[in-house]
Image 1 (cartoon, one colour):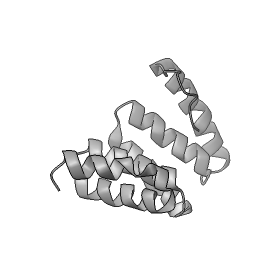
Image 2 (cartoon, rainbow, N blue to C red):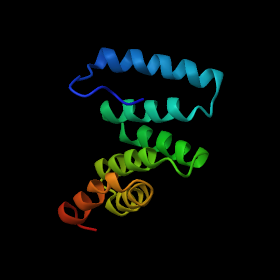
Image 3 (cartoon, one colour):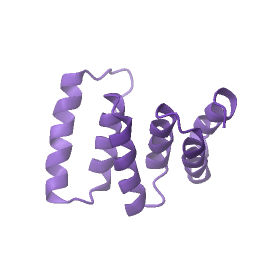
Image 4 (tube, rainbow, N blue to C red):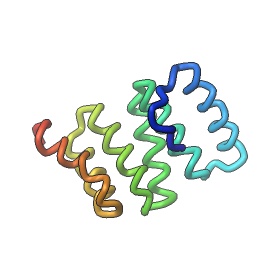
Length: 112
C-alpha cells in the first residue's frame, strides 16, 4: 500500500489501515501487499522490530519485492543494524535502481 504524496498519516489513519490489513491477512496469511502495508504501518508507529518481521515475511514470499527490501533496510537502520540495512538496501537497488539512496545513507552516515 503506497500512500498518496502530500498526505500525512495520523495514528488514527494508521490504526484504521492496520485493521483492514489484518482482516486481509486473516483471509490470506501470505497476502504480500497486506504484509508489506502492515510492515510500513509498524515502521511509521516506531515499532521497527515488528516492521522487520513483516518485511522479512514479504521477501520470503517474493524475493523480487524491491520495496519490501527497501522497507527492511529502513527498519534495520532504525534498529541501529547498519550491516543488515545495507544488505537490504543493496538488494532493493539491484532490483530497482531508483531505490539506491538508502545504501548511500548507510555508507555516508553510519559506521559499518
